Image (cartoon, rainbow, N blue to C red; front, top):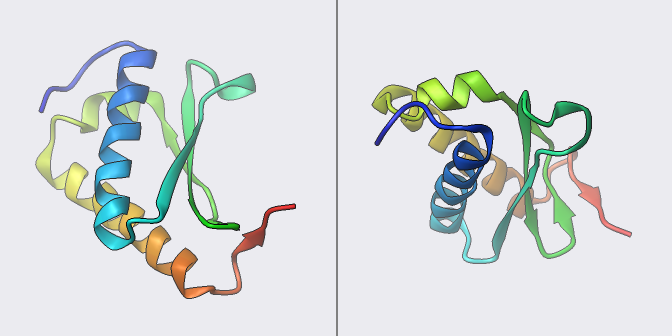
Length: 100
């Protein structure tokens, strides 16, 4: 893995990384990466969708992801966070939001 990269490149990496780990928990999991609006160029908000269930958000600062993607321990921690979101969303815990 490599650290560095521009905002769009890092976003693609993050979406692929999160999808890879989300699918290990549930083949029905979809990653929603919000990177537009006031956070554009600064941060990403990541959510997991399973059917009509939507997880809580994880906010990740662009510099954190850019620099962390080359560090194994950081990647392992992020993978566990993503997989935890999937487990929580699939389990139907109280923090879930139903889509309209």
